[in-house]
Amino acid sequence: MSAAVGEGAELPGIELAREPYITVWPSRLAELDRCGRAYRNRYVLGLRGEEAPSHPALELGLAVHRELEKRHTAPGRHDEPEPILEHDPQTLEAVARFVAAHRTVCPGGPQGDAAYRGGERTLGWRFTDERVLLLATIDAVWERPDGTIELRDYKTGGLAPDPTEDPAAAVHALLGRLTWPDRPLRVVYERLAHDPVLAAVDVDEEVVAGAARRVRHHAATLRAGDLPARPGPVCEPCPWRSTCPASVATGA
Image (tube, rainbow, N blue to C red; front, side):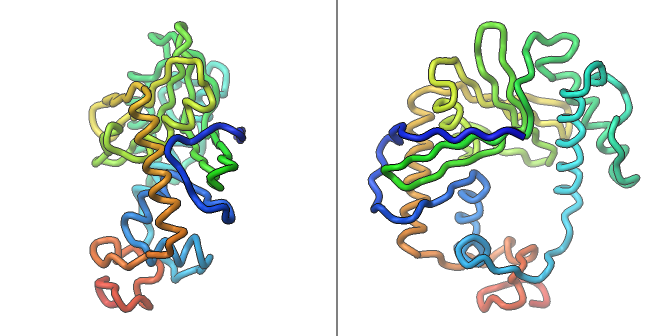
């Protein structure tokens, strides 16, 4: 894993008080939208709740990510038909299906022309004036022959979001533009759950400005401290479901 944190660039439209840094990850943008109280418990107060029900789909997704990263870094092993890492017997067959799907859309496969520039790569940028540290982990970075940088996010769930509407894709676009300011840039969601499909966003000024607005809103919300509970389907897997007075989780 590699990390790079730049400093000194302007984040358009952000004017915040000079207070301790707010760390912004794409997943945290979504979590604050889901439930402010859970966000406060986890990231502001640092609480550890009760063990939440396991999520087999999440575990499978992590296994697929590890498998694909290994294939891109192990010389000559990308196109092996069977998984090259050890996996739980319950996930082995599913990992093999995802690998087969990925091979049909991989930009560096037998029919591809892109160069692999790293996987599970953390990009970061420190905005000193705004007191914001923006971070994101990219599943795979590819460089096309024409110089285009392609940031890929593997999606193994059946309900993969549209990158044109997903705040995580916007954050990836913003960090990509800051990291490669003079390159054509594209954010790609590689959907592998069914027939493999690519969904892409070409990064332009409008995309970057939209991401900046979203980061500004997120940081301002945290500094204002208005983090209400939002009871609903998110209560069932929540680690604080049995102690939250607003929870609607079964049995809580």
